[in-house]
Image 1 (spheres, one colour):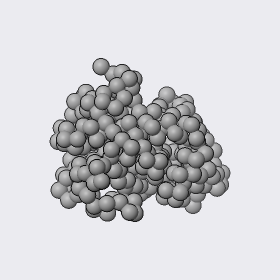
Image 2: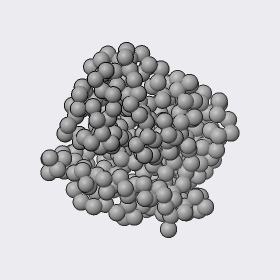
Image 3: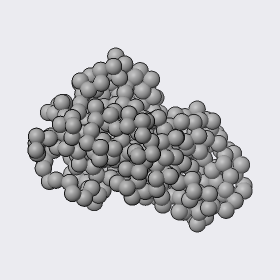
Image 4: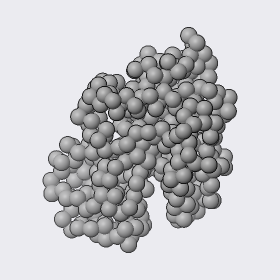
Length: 341
């Protein structure tokens, strides 16, 4: 099983590097075709990949409120169905910077990878994610071998479901896991009773509540799991344009400060830009802490997940996060926020 997983990952990385990310995401209308790192109207071009939920909010605010432009960069945002796709976009050269959750990021930290860690910027509160089922025969994590589990492959959800199975004394080999293309598709399959168990997400809570016979098993907090979203960068881009990357981090922190100071306007901007519900954005604001920083705790958090990936055959060899962390941009932009030595 381990060799098969390693072969799959190695093959996927090879395909990504060889063929690029055509069709992976949708660029925001009106963005320019200037190459990464080039200047237009005295602004350095930076291509950023995000999802359409909490990983995107600060970037959208930074662009729409002019925080990035004020710091000398022209940010082009491309949205993807999941954070892992933003990291794949960095791998293939389609993005300079990407936002993804811890597990997705760690799966791409291999010797051949150009992906580097910049900072933490999103942390979930207890109860932001939960595990629920509509199958009456499933009353605890120990029962998850019954029925079908719906998740998106390669994403945070895959890791959290694996940890939930562990809490019940099971492994992924004991479960009937169904891989779907997006969180929205997972929720739709759950409501339609095509899958029995899912990872609950607050932005989808209204849709999830439509499922008949649903009941919550526990939360990620109950099993001692904290999830964090990180910002990653292309190694070559960071080396060639450290000031532009620093400007991105500074503009992102200014956007985070704006979210905290004017939550209502921030939610409306995100809802309009991403064509999502303002209420869902507000739920995310309540459920996640936003802050551009990197601490010893952040380092240990990533290292623990990377170690888990090795132990479970997701990564072939040990990964030292220190080998994949770029200090200079955060030191330039927000030196007081870099507390890991």
